[in-house]
Image (cartoon, rainbow, N blue to C red):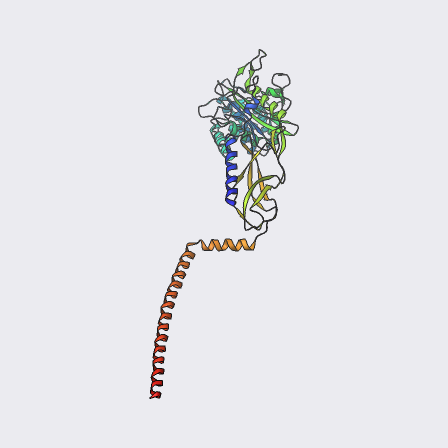
Length: 460
């Protein structure tokens, strides 16, 4: 009976794994409809609340990041400064390094004195390559020295497919990263309040300096600006745009609504009329809005595992009343899933469970874990505990111990030797006993003969 239970449990797990998709959870097909498509080469949407992946398209593909590079530039600066009000002087070499590139600038000049905070604003809001070069020389001694710091930091925070050649993002054959790595960089940078504040600003008034009058910086992220009706999203808080010939149109951003927080990456976008209004739109902006709008509308935290919910059974040894023990979830577990899905919409895959357990066990004893699966992705882990007490039967335990002992080779050898000795003893006993009988019979014959002789002598 126990073997049958093990077989049924194993078969159920195998069949469950067959019907689940092998790919990670990905709502790409749900986000895209007949009228709405994600047109960028790379798209990624993740939950900042629990880290779950919502939408993924080519997220591990190395791609030119353009000015998304400046997220790492800002991160290195923030990690290596204690005073954002410290004033630095823009190096002439920084201005010279981008001369003739035709790239975006913030209008700073060689010899201009600005605080580190204002330099970061010049870097992140109008996407100034001049600010990137100036900060690189200020913190790395040389641009190459700073780039090495960028690559070292990328490795330290867990980026596995990233290599930087410069601090601003101009195209270079080996200047590549991935959407997944950019998400890591962005989350790390958002740990700094100054970064979070700067990237969320639609505009910024740059204070007067020794070489420039007060001037307004305008954010290149049009999702922050209500003047851009096609792009504006009141839930978006930042972060950085990018655009080069190799990279196309790119955007890393994050958004919050009703307590839900997401981070999106879109790379390799172009300009096209994707909504049928006769106007070509930036597809990095469009993809980002489509992903956010779908997630905020459709995803909610739902209870996917009830406390005490039955998960599976495990065969039980040494118990007279029960052949198996039920395992249930220790706690209630919530996960981000499409609205209307609950504990009946998920499946469970037990992990590292023993083939059987020995009585006695107590209700609440922890036995193992189970993956909570939804749409092919693990969305959580449930700790498994015993559902009811199970006492040990001394008789069954003794029987099992006897069976265990008697099944061992050493016991079999000893038993065989004992049998041989017993047989040998029986044979020897039989032979010895037979000899004694013969001796007694002989003595009896002689005694009878002596008796007869005595009687005969008396008669004479």
